[in-house]
Image 1 (cartoon, rainbow, N blue to C red):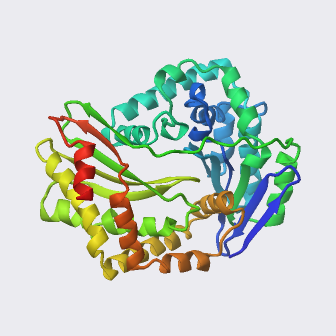
Image 2: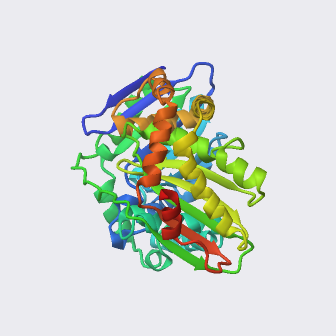
Length: 420
């Protein structure tokens, strides 16, 4: 790997990876300021701030921000997650300095014009409404809420409409002061990039930022619980979760491989049993998500009200069975899928820049690809079975159901069946 890392005097980190043969690059700023860093009264402010960054700076209007990148054929965007807000662009090699300048401008110099705040407030309220009208989106917000009740980790990234409706310019400025210090920022670039040039540009753009102490986030506590919401939909949307390792936990790769074998593809247990053999659903999958100090194994499916009980029972039966008879062939297939997904993702400079920022934030270094592959290959069938047994016997779980419910499965019934 052609990975190079540099840290400015104020603590801002820069990581680049040159990808020979490419004529384009991805460059961005990743900030450790997401939903879990908000106080209760700030819920939704990180996402609101991400939107406002594109609404004008001291140097550029919102239209000029878009035109600066699109005039050279590039692409610019951003996202907010529970632990990160990212601003990034994809451009041709010659336009990397321009892209970094635009991104630095929107991150460091937003003007937060009152008129633009009102416009974007309306946009975000529409976004919240869209999520509420999308059952297979909102059910995951509810699942997160009951898994981590009354905690930053359990709150919606978008925030509640009533909170978003009240945000003012001062709220945005306060969050920037609290969370957008240089020690919370990583400049990452991959593709046709020159490390020394990126460092020089970043020094000019970000070097004057004053360092500030990093405020700790509230540790997450997976408590579990359930939420049932009745609505006249075509399907019941079913989401079940258990706590799994965070990304620094030695068992992280085991949890990823377990989730893949359980419900990661068409050959997985849940897909074969629930869809192919019994026709209980169109969509069913399992996934393992991780954060700094916790994670969740999640199973999702959509089915009819008449079949939700059978589907839920089948799901927990498969969870229990994995501890007894997960096969070496299933584990090998899941390992292969995980490695292929990793390697295929490395063909994109956008994916590489994202990976660089994520790994640097986790480890303060970029583990060699061979090291990651070795950790995936080191996971054994016994490891996966033991993990499945621990999950099945752990007791705490979270359940969210949304749709035309007529009673529906209860969490205590499902966890009791799992432990039987």
